[in-house]
Amino acid sequence: MSGSNTQETPGASGLAPDSEVEVRLRTLIARPTAAEFHALWESQETSPDVFAFIRKDGFSARDYAEAFLVDQYHRWIRGKGLPAEAYCRELRRHFEERLDDHEWDLVEHEFVLRRDLSDASSPVVSDFVQRFPNLADRSGAQFGTSSTGWETALDSTKSSDSDESAGIADAMTRTFMRTEKDCQEKYSTVELDNEASGLLIQESGEWSHSPDSVLGQSRPFAKLPPTLVQHIENLLEPRRYQLGEYLMHQDDPGDGLFLITDGQVEIQVTDGHGDKHVITSCGKGEILGEMALVTEEPRTADVVAITDVSSKFLPGEVFDELAGRFPVVSRVLTKLLADRLGVRGRDVLAGKTFDDYRILHRLGKGGMAIVYQASHNETGEHVALKMMSHRLVYDTKALEQFQRESKIIESFDHPHIVQMKGRFRAFRSFFIVLEYCDGVSLDVTLQDTGPLPLADFRQVIGQLASALAYAHQHNVVHRDVKPSNIMLTDCGDVKLMDFGLANPVDEAGTKGIVAGTPRYMPLQQLRGGSIDPRADLFALGCTAWKLLTGKDLITENSLGEIVKRHENWQVPEVDCEDPAVCDFIQNCLQHQAEDRIVDLSEIARWCDEKADL
Image (spheres, rainbow, N blue to C red):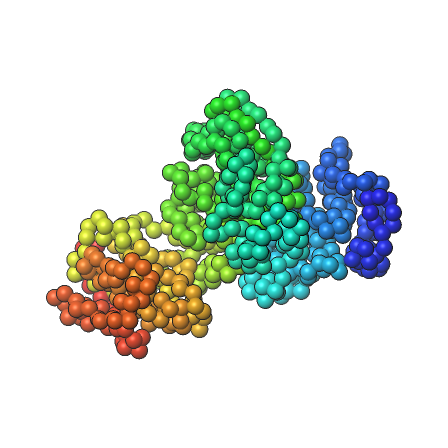
């Protein structure tokens, strides 16, 4: 079929005459709404706007879904398919009732279209499971994976299929970019098939954009090729606002993205008491509204003009089409969102509720996650919510590691290991619910009070040894033992935290990747080799040294210098009046793993002693 009303042969669309897709279409257009919109596709030279078509009085959710299914068919056979999320988002905007059945029809239809198109790479089951975790059970049953629920959404990232196929959307991106003549030489320097580095993103620098391109000069679009940026700019709508006018309202649906081209705006958050808090102000070149688009959640803040403002607006449905054709557009916005969350004095998520937990404030931010203090809406219990950073949304290995951490902590029950209370998916990310511990980390304690007195030292090390012995008995290597990952509660209890790098013993080798904190690693771990629980013993020895002396044992700054220190390693002399403490630290710090002979259960008995903690 084609927009010129001539009958297209099955081969032209990439579909066999009696394929499942063609049979589905014939069944679908027997219904009035689907037939009406199908006729528009058949009679018009240009693609009809399904989002304008469905906004008619009296149209039900089913009418919407039928029109969307027809639109899916025609777009995908023409090589410009929208992701199912674009249609699902529009359904949720207009209908409050549960729409899982309609959403499932759209998800299944995209899968079948991509599977049956002769010029499309095969769809990856794990991709659909990750994109639609609420439909994971159906995806598993229909598309052929045995996993279900949360396990499916995360564990399926191990599928080798995900490494073998970049997917039809990325293929479209590559096709588009290869036709752009003015940047062909630069494109050859970009690893287009390297999913980990981000398709078409200039990771080590920025492209040379025209000085007149406001979008090209803004973060993060400066990392995209000029022709793609120009393509996006051509889709932007100019909008102007006077002093005091609102560009966006908190809690409104995210209907698009703003680029400020002139003037200043202020970002404000209203808390649960009705008080307004100014987050920041910004001006020319700033991108606003990415949170609502990326997460499909209501807007988290007000944006008000504090001068006259000129802006460009990208409607949500246009963004969805762009993201479907060029996945890198979603990726740069995801990176921007990750950079913005958890860095200001007041986080924009403060006061928001996810899965019955109301976020109070941010506790900290690391490379893989942001940690918030939150309270349960019904019980009032305070917890720590660990949210995976949005910059890792497209990193299947990071997603797998985050899931591994949750599995490990969920299986543990030890008084000196932080306890896990649940996990859930929200805000287009993944959350782990952990017990909230009042107190400070040991590195903060050392900064405030200096080295620990001997009695307190034995208490802390005894509890930490007990925690590590438990982990090792359960076949887990922590891989990142250090003072900042150990909490000292107000009651004097030690809590070993952050199992984000932990691995089962038989998987603890990092395969050439250095994972952990170099100043606390033995040489084998520094070189990315296979490790076992004795790597934790070395880190425990470095931690004990700092608790006893207030100083780092390894002070070199670069990885190369640290490796050289290890190659000429000498076990340090320990200045302590307690021979047992000296022997313990020196045994932990032996160069060869087989020489680190430490009975953690024996050291754990130190915590039975009295101390002033």
